[in-house]
Each structure stands twice: as structure tokens, then as C-alpha cells.
Image (tube, rainbow, N blue to C red):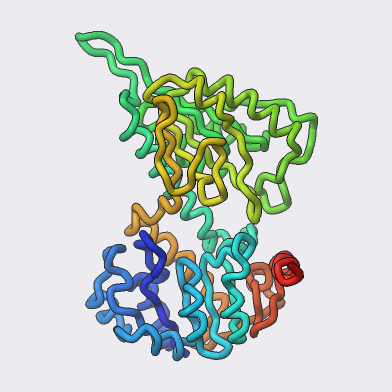
Length: 381
């Protein structure tokens, strides 16, 4: 069996799906591995590093695509690459099946089996494969650093001979993995941190990090799904949160937003008036930019100034820390591949909860009901 590792083709992408340590593990199981030349360069892994653990280095991307049985990726390859896949090949990575399912059509037409790391079930046995949480950890950490670097004030309380410098006030919206990491990092930098999340259960985690948890009475509605993710709320419920956010924004130096709903547009939580009531020099880091953004003024992928408030809308923060982001992702991917590869052979057990939950398409047939529904609707139009 041959596993092929590609150099990521998305603009600005610096991560790699598998690092040499992972390749060494696969080789010990009798699996052949071919890597595209320089695929891990930005992540600190040279061609020599891969060659030392037994990988073959290839400069022929087309040949690699047409011969590999399994292709672990960070992002879904472009259509031109998917057209070259070996019949029945397995592709696994962040495939965005609920956000852009149409991009997977070429692979499905080739009879490919597709596994999406976004869909790995949130169960105890799959915790070591949770790539979403790994990347959210990196993004939350970097968001706090970005805020500190761009805020024209210092984060910590300083008592000097020239007077006292008050600490910065950081407001984090969404207390999932990214939000909690942003809170922890901002706290380590000395800021006073408050946070809001529609899930009341997140309050204990926020408080455990030394931050203030802000609560809104949402009338007892269910705010969390079975997977632990925030559910899409009604406009009435969202408005209650928006009012709290607007009030808190007036005294905040930094707002970091992280609220996203899988397969949906990110909820609009920070209204224009909230931004306009922030003082000049304040900073907003919108981590929900890939989903459209939590701030009404967000322009995904752009940095804008609105009345002296700088709004950052990064599309891929983990790629700005490629070494550790790749280390985490590579480990997640290795653990996932161990479910699929047994004694050097590809063994796909669709009765396995992890395999079934993360599978988008099996041998060219879409098996995920939500993805199938979206594709059918698109075809009908």
C-alpha cells in the first residue's frame, strides 16, 4: 500500500499532513510512503528528513496522485488534482464537506473514499484524532498574540516610577477550544479577561482560567448539540447576546470572536454600533472569518480600520505557526490512519463509529446524509 503526501497548494498554506516521525511509524507497519518534494519545508521538515525515515521523494505530483492508495492532506486538493486520483483512492483531511461539498465531486466521480477530519466524532476514543481542536488551539493562541502586538497599549498591569499602567481589557466571544486558548494566553500576558458563550456549561471552564464569565438569560433554550457544539439560535436569542456584547465592547480594548456553527454561516454577534462605541486603538480579531465573521464589519481575509478600531479577519491562523500546527495535525492524522490501516493493509470498517462518522463518500457513493442533501439540492437548482 502506498501513502502519498502532497505539498499543499492553497495560497498561504504552510502546514503538511504528515511529518517524518509519522512516516517512520507508517514504514514500521510495512507501508510505502512517497512525499512530494519540499512538502514539509515550511513545517521544519526537509526532503532529507523524510528520506532518512524511508520515504521516497517525488517531483512528479501527477504520478504521485495517480499511484497513491491513501492521500492524507491538510486541505482538499484542487479539482485538477482530484481528476488524477487513482480509482478508489482514499483522501482524508479538512475537506469542508458541509461548507463546499461541490468541490468534492471530482473525487467522488473517481470512485474515491473521502474522510473529513471535521466530522471525526467527539467521542473518547477519537480525542487523539480531533484535528479541529488542535487547530483551534493554535488559532486561539495566535489571536491573543496578534491582539497584543497590534494594540497600542500593553497587556499587563505595570507599576512604575512614572505611574501605574492599567491592564488591557480583553473580551472573548465563544468559549470553545479557540476561545479558551485565547483566554489563557491573554491571561498569561497579563490582561483582564471576560468571556461570553451561549452555552452556560462553558462558564466553569472560563472561570477556571481566571476570566469573568458573562451570562445572558436565553429563556432556557437548548444551546448545545449532542457533539458539544453551539447550536444555531433564534434571532431573539442572538439579540440578547448582542446587547450584552455591545455593552461590554465599550470598555474593551480587545475583542476576540470565535463563534461558529458547523456547516452554517458564522452568527453575527458584534454589531456596527458596538464597534463604533469602542475607543480608538481598540482591536478586533475575528476568528470566525472563514465562516463569514462574527462582526458585522468583518471583511474575511482583510484587515480594516473603522473609526480607529482595527478589525482583523484571518482565514488561516494555524498556517502562521506551521511547525507546531503541523506537529499536532500530523499526530491527529497518524492516529486516524491507524484506524484505517491494519498490518500494512487498508481496512475500512464502516461499522466502526469513527470510520462511519467521518466518512463523506465510500467508493464513489456519498454516505453522509447532510452532504448528500446539500449536493442533491445544488443539482436540483
